[in-house]
Image (cartoon, rainbow, N blue to C red; front, side, top):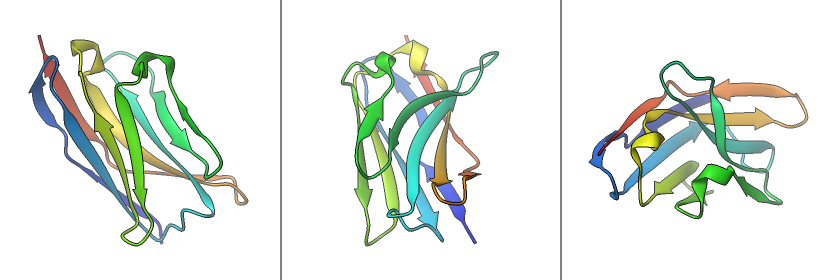
Length: 116
């Protein structure tokens, strides 16, 4: 059974950093595309970054401020966010997409708030 649990969100001042972590149980990174998405109040959920094992694609708004990392041994998928802006305020969600089964899994989300 797939379970994604995010942690690491919080309140930070503009220019600060946060590291989000996704503990992915029941997931083999070889079979899944892992991603981070975010949803700001009143807006649709949007892609932040995905890693399908062959390439990593960041949204344009990332502007080289965010970096992902995967620990295959611990099944952890992290998002390091630097130079945060108030516009980065959102609930951040971890996503696992099984490429053969065409099935999505989501975590419960973690709130990131960036104050100006």
